[in-house]
Image (tube, rainbow, N blue to C red):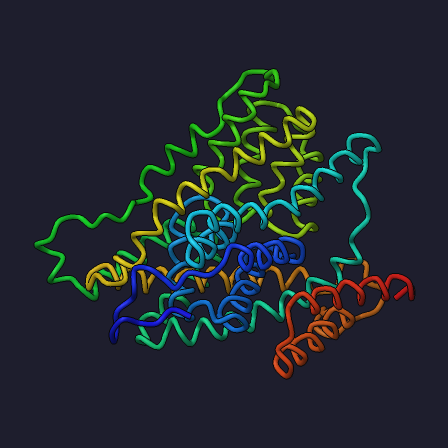
Length: 411
């Protein structure tokens, strides 16, 4: 675990670990990290803060907050950053590749089956049991991170609650992260900032323009070419903020509306694959690349959409400790951390609705609309997690087994 050099300071270089421990951890997470970015972050915190004690909760929050300020899949960028933090440049690459690779390989197999047989493999009942377990894991992580993030004042708690509410009302993620971060910084350091130069924080003002040029407009169906496919996914990796649902909006605007490479049903199937496989939701790109151009298309699309994340993490990492040490910009980072937790809580609420509520057509009349089996799995997982603090991999496997057992029992 990193030792502080003095009270209130953050060392620029953590104690280095080994490449093998980084590889083992992120390969495991790549195989079991179901549930989307919020679940991935919760599992990473359990592994690197609670079990292995590689870093403190505050340092973890700083890295997580920084990942939310740059485009790309935030949980994948956190994996890349944690690898860099633990063992340097090679670990940066290793952590990201091993977190992505299992999902990419699974998606490749599914894409092959989809092209040859026209349907997706049935995995609904496994996911049915896994999702309630993920909710328990995420809630535990949120509780621990919340205590770290808001101990610096009630105003930061207000930022988190405000972001939670505004996100659910549909406000833009970038506006919330940067807007409230800058507002909080100004409130804390208003007098000092009046006479200072503009801070080096990258504003979100140019993102709208980038989003508009991410997908080329096309009249009629455009021909699929490998260079065109690679460039399109590379642009997506540069401009897409937020969750896989944000990616969905970009994909539909580009591949369905402009390029006419996909139908709506194919896009829905592609996103479903990203949801029920472990690892990053952005491996949807692997599925789409295979549909467009076979194995070369799948590999190029995957590399292109994730490559910007590796570059951006390498660029932003040296600034994180400087942001924390700066009196002015430390306030911005605190607010960004609180805002990121608010976003994580809002996404968890949406996931809980999908995981714990009874589906339409449910034969029984469950109280308050909850699915009793899903709620039971959630409560059992929560008790086990709080009482025994097991490795999250066992909980995920247990949830999958419970879902499969319910299917076999006809319940």
